[in-house]
Image (cartoon, rainbow over the protein chains, first blue to last red):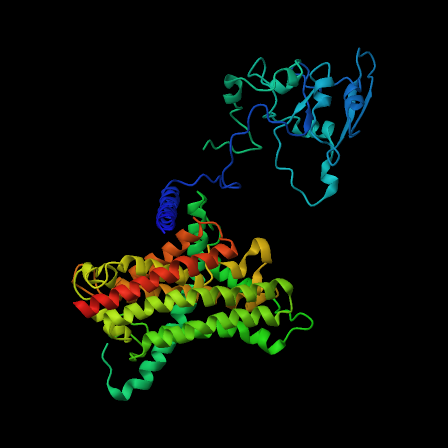
Length: 195
Length: 332
């Protein structure tokens, strides 16, 4: 009898403690990010789909069609084509096809690239109802960004670009606090509204 | 609000419209309150996109439900299937006719108001049972069986508490019960410890039983969506489900209104001055908020836990309060 009463008392008490906790949460501010209206800061090491890197000196893609990324890709989603212009020492890329429907974002291509010619983009708004949208021509994408200042492109001698660094990204999986906080000031793709 | 005898039909018509719109509006906007509350309890904002602070959300929801077809699954008992939602909604509407919202703001001030509410309150159980049984769906039938055993279990402590209250107040007229609680808040039945020192416990039992009778979490065994799809409502679509959903909130409204009348002094002001309908609504909405608060705090009980709570704890304690208050009344 005594045990039963003690059990009822402690049980009832625990219910009121629980109510106290939830009402405490009720009056705290919400933590929701109202997505289309506001977005979080994209970390510097965010691994989106890959993109070609422009050579700051020439304005052309750095890629010289060695096809190491094509070979490194376990899902067989990269196809690189290029030509060798007259008098040039290296080939230049003319068609860099990424089949993003098969890509698992493993990053082997970025690791395999000898010249830092590809890197992860910060693109994450990839929803589409059309499958063709995921078969991307990265060369055309770079060309389209062409004349305008590419926001994710490194400014000359500027901020750290960990994804384009020649060090394979696996050796430095976490960006240092300094590089994580540095963000391009004029990112058009994502509205950087710091919470 | 004084009416001469000749205006009685007009008065009743006004109350009919008033109660129907009050219930409809509340059923719609309590869903909004529920969703907002659920959000805030989980540090989310709840509905925000439709209208200011999501205030148009219920209208959009109702529009969606109205535009959907009510599918009659093969082999159901068509009449019962269609009648069940109405059977759940109607008693709540009828019971609100005797609730005194203000001093003279009751559609019918009858002497057996409390009895009438409990009589109609039991129909609610039958409605869910019929809905579940006529659906010809195994989950719905399990749910129907659960509802019956749950409500048999919880009707008993609830009625024992009601008997205690009738003994303490000496009347079943709800308006008189409220008038007896005039004055400061310690005159409310909840704090009348002189009559029965276990009065707050009685209120807790009443509130718990009210949650169980209206099938609210943590006692929502009838609609345990993690086990029974949607319980008795599994086969309902469109406004068939919508009426069930609104009736659930109408029943919560009724339960909280009754708790306010019985224990929290109805339309009496807590400071002994300016009694009015505002106080009634404030107390009622506080209780409704508590219902939402409880739902988003406690996980659903298991079925045997639910029955154990009623038969092993609530019924004995409510019997104790009944005996205690009758002894106190006899002695004092």
